[in-house]
Image (cartoon, rainbow, N blue to C red; front, side, top):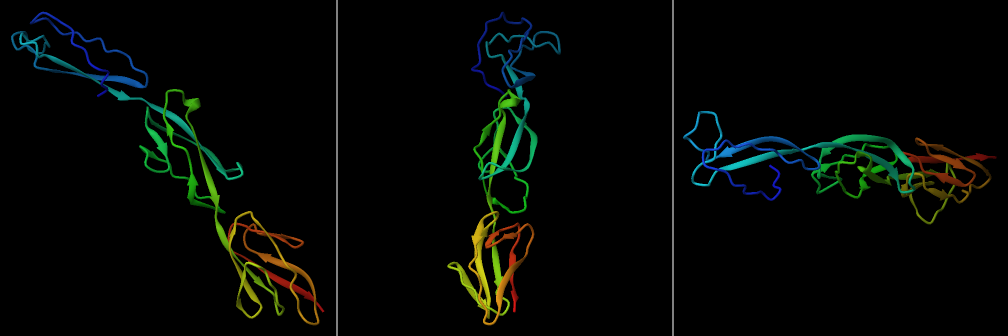
Length: 219
């Protein structure tokens, strides 16, 4: 029921009730329910009772309108295609504590638990019903295998002989690598494994899963 404040029109006792529902933005008239009508007129006829207590309750339903969700990373880059949904007029849409909870799709390299969005209140202008979900990058472990040599880095922990770990490397972030050393050998290059991770010279770029760098030597 949509309460628009109500009104108390006057009518003669026994007169037939005729209701002309008003129009309200975002709502559609559903039905009218009568209470305490006259029992002295023909069956099935809603008439005004003599005691002045007749009530006509008008019920409205919320209309549904489309809204569009955009999915981007912290640099504003699109990480997933736009999605269009519908929700009731005046409903709030967001990630938490809203009438409608938006569930961001899983995207490789990103952490859905870190997503943020400003809640949207659904209006009648569907073009204006837009919500943007911003993803935070997921973090992964980088393993560096010096392959018989040694290596050092300010954020690295040695986990075995010549094997090191750099924890919490964010997706698409870069790590500047020190050159490893090995007695009697000359370092040639790094070999990288791990989806979408890459190496360019001494710069490693984190991909969408844990990565391993292995030193290759000449000698």
